[in-house]
Length: 38
Image (cartoon, rainbow, N blue to C red):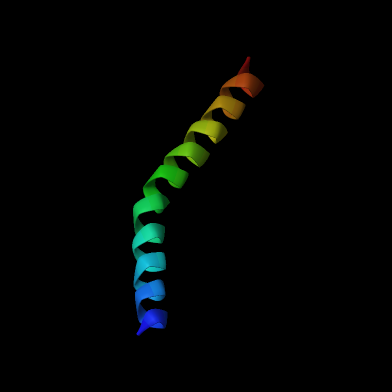
């Protein structure tokens, strides 16, 4: 039972954290592109 709870919590955290990480990576890559253009 604890394993299922841990797996469920990990899955929920991954789903909740994925958009934030994606935005951070996109923002970081965009800043690098702008720096290269300048």
